[in-house]
Every structure is written in C-alpha cells, then in structure tokens.
Image (cartoon, rainbow over all chains, first blue to last red; front, side, top):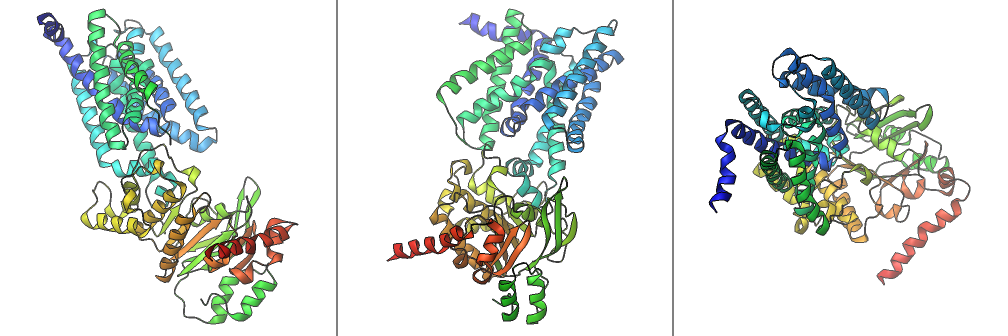
Amino acid sequence: MDTIIDAIYDPFRHGFMVRALVVSLLVGIMCPVIGSYVVTRRLAFMGDALSHAIMPGLVGGFLIGISPFAGAIPVGIGVALLIGVVSRRTGVSEDTTIGIMFAGLFALGLTMLTKADGIPVDLEDILLGQVLAVSPADVYVTLGLAAGVLTALALLHKELVFASFDPIGATVAGLPTAALDYALLVLLALVIVLAVQAVGVVLVMAMLVTPAATAYLLVRGFIPMMALSALLGVVAAIGGLYLSFYYNLPSGPAMTLVATGLFLPVAAVRRRTA
Amino acid sequence: MGLLGSKTKERAAQDPTWENAGEKAWEKTGEAQATPAIKVENLTVEFNGSLALDDVSFEAGPGMLVSVVGPNGSGKSTLMRALVGLVAPTSGSIRINGLSPIKARGQIAYVPQREHVNWRFPITALDVVMQGRTRSIGLFKMPGRGDKEIVRQALERVHMQDRANALVQELSGGQRQRVFVARALAQEASIILLDEAMSGVDVVSQETLFEVFNELRDEGKTIAVATHDLAELADRYDTCLCLNCRMCGYGPVESTLTPAVLEQMYGASPSHIHHHVPAIGEEDHGHDH
C-alpha cells in the first residue's frame, strides 16, 4: 500500500513535476472545453492545422531567446484570422485553404529549426510535447491564458452556442456571426498554444477531440458535455504525466494513449444519432 | 382581407404576368396603410451570371399569411435569403418595415431550411427558444425572469412545453419546426419567414403551426412560408406568391393559382398538379365524416 502511495506522491518531490502537474491539469481542462465546440462544429481539421501552423512562432520564440509563447501566441492568432479571411475572399474551399496554410507554415517552422544554430530545444519536444520541461514562467503564462479563454467562453456562451447550432438564424437575429467565428478560432489558437507544451504540435488534436467525443457519447446537453470532457481530459493528462515520468515517454503520446483508451470502450457500447 | 381591390384582383387573375400587384392594390383601394412589412421592387438576383430572381415586385403585410410557391430552383429560397439580407440584390430594392434588410435585422425571425441547421449540436428545445431572446438580453448577460416567462409561453403556444428539456436532435421534424416557430415568437419579431417549412412535418404539427400563424396574422404580424405543398394552399394562406425565377402571380390564392399560372411555374403538364390540389382536399374532407 505504501509503495502505491509513494508512487503517486513521489514524483512531486521534484519542482519540475509540480510545474508539469499544473500545466497538465490546465491542458486537460482547456482542450476538451474548447474541443466540445471543435467536435460539434467539425473543426477538427482546423485545430490540427492551427497546431502545425504555429510552429514558426514557437521556433521564432526560442530563437529570439524569449519564451516560445511570445512567438506562438501572435502567430496562432494571425493564422486563425488569416484562414477565415482567405477562405472568405478567394473562393477556394475552406478545407483546401486550411491545408495550404497548415503545410506551408509547418514547413517554414521545420526549416527554421533545421537552420537555427544553438537553439535550446529538440524537434521531438516540439512535435511530441515535453511537459516535464516547462519553466516557472511557462506555468504563469499558461495560467493566464487558461483564465482568459475560460472567461471569454463564459461571457460569449449563449452567442457561441446560437451561432454553432444555427448560424443563419443567428445572423438574421442580428448576431455578429462572422466576428463570433473569428473569436472562437482565436480562442482555439490560444488553447492550442498552451497545449503544445504538453502534447506537442502533432498530438494537440487528440486532446481537442478525443475527450470531447467521449463525453458526447455519454451525456446529452452541451454544458454537461463540456464538464465531463474536462474531467476526462484531466484524467488523460495526469495519467499521461505519470506514464511519462515512470516510463520516460514523451508526454504527448502518453496522454493521447490514455485519452484513446477512455474513448474506445465507450465507443464500443454507446451510439448517438443526430 | 383588403389585399386587392376587385378590379385588380381580376386583372391579377387574368394576366398572371402582371407584376406589382400588391403595390398597385394599395393605391387603388386607397386604404390608409402603414408602411408595408415587406416591400420588394424590381428585385433581380444573379449568381455567377445566371438569374435566380428576375424582376420580382410585391408588397406584403402588415397582417398577412403568404405562401411562396414554385418548383425547385424557382428562387423561393433566394427570395427568402434576400429578404433577410443574406443575399444581396443584383438590382432592385427591398424594404423591411421601411428599412434595408441588414438594418432590419432582429425585426425578422427566420426559420432556415433544415440542412442549414447543425443538428449534431446538443441543445434542448428550451435553449433553442431562448435563442430568440439573445438580442434582447444583450451581450455578456444572462436571461432574466421576463425572458424565461416569454420562452415558457412561446413553448406552450406551439404545444411543446412537455418537451422543453428534450434535445432538438431527438425531436421529430414537425416538433423541431414547432420549436423554431416558438423561437420566432420569443424573438417578438413582426415578420416571420419560414424556408421550406412544411416538408417532413406531420399533420398534428402542421395543424398547430397554422393555428399559431393565423393568430399571429390577426395580431398584425406578417408570415411568409416557402413551400412545395400546393394541397390546401387556399385553406391555409391568404395570399400566394408564385415564382419561377420571374413572378408568375401574386394575390389571393384561389384567384391567383390559375391553370395558366401553374403552367408558367411547372411547365407543360399543369393538369396533373391542378387536379392534385382538390383531390387531396377531398380526401381530407371525406376523412372528417
């Protein structure tokens, strides 16, 4: 018994593990909460694209020697707005626009990383996440971002729900639906930026959609879906953190495997028709 | 209902290509009318060089229940979308309570075609009806007691109070449509537009909806319904607007929906459709006995 309790508490004798715990908790909550919109509005591809497209921002942040957030936040917001504008203006379909930006910016980020000398980060950590490496400053930025995004989601809740359910009806009722769509994309970009430290560019998608999809199968309403998906997200994030600590795994794949492990049995027994 | 004077009524019936029926009618009957709820003048809408609506003019309301009929691709939906400012006129003008469609937003409640609604989104009937209050409540605020009371009454009016906490994705087509009409009621809009409102709607729901539409018309609201369903058109609506890209006729249903107009809308075999109309009416009649 003692050994189990030790196994649970031991890791947190290390300061880096306490920081990792805080960031994992926040990622576990924030990704599924905004992910509930991603799942019900079919924004999964958009989410995946945004996470890859912030790569130049992350690398730029490391290169300048300040926090990677400093580069990733403006790039994330910029890409979110640009995708909206380009697909509205060019008449090229939205998924094609997203694909072009996704690939182009990811390639730029990879090139920057390859050519940069003395950058204090591995490609693997950016792609797969390394929550054990977060700095105290990262923790504060993550806390601030999470608080800001949650506040915005709460304040805009009824408008975002209306625009998500019936965009045309919402426009006619006088809601600024285009602005609301952009707002949601910017919030999504911010959540992705904070999540990349834990799950990496490649696997942010898993934390965005998997717990939210699991919750969608289990509960009926949207608020219960957000709440349960956050709980599942926390289980996946903390579970992944332990796996990462004890088995020396990158944190992204570890968290993703736990989230998928929660989804599969639920998907096997539950079905939802719309 | 004072839509058309008797002379104009005749003329509209005899010559279905005669446009501006509504507009001329107001002049001739000389009724002291307030601003028409909907005023459309020479509306033309083009998409990529092909005409969706060609020189359509009419006036409606306040206090009218209008059906908008025509075959697939006749511009019914385009007209609806133009009235709410989702489609810009290529030429011509639209006035909603005297304002441009964009400025009049909020004064029109719109029930979209079902394929434009995200049914995957898990939301209760009650919350959908509360959406009608969104603008009145205001940004960043929560619904108050007054809003909740309005929503409760709206649900009762369409007989959906017992399903208030059901998810709309679990409801039948007819029940969903009743919830959307309740949302329009909660919005307290003076004009309600329904795009393809009656397809897949069960008989009970249709009865409920037309009860509500008639009450609303009597309260001075203007309701326009795009529909494929020519059966019972005359029983259900005051007025019909016949579209086939151009306006083929506009006026009281019985005098407007003539064989000539039907041929203009549906092409060379209107007899089939025309016979179809009374046939269904008779069936229903027989059923009552």
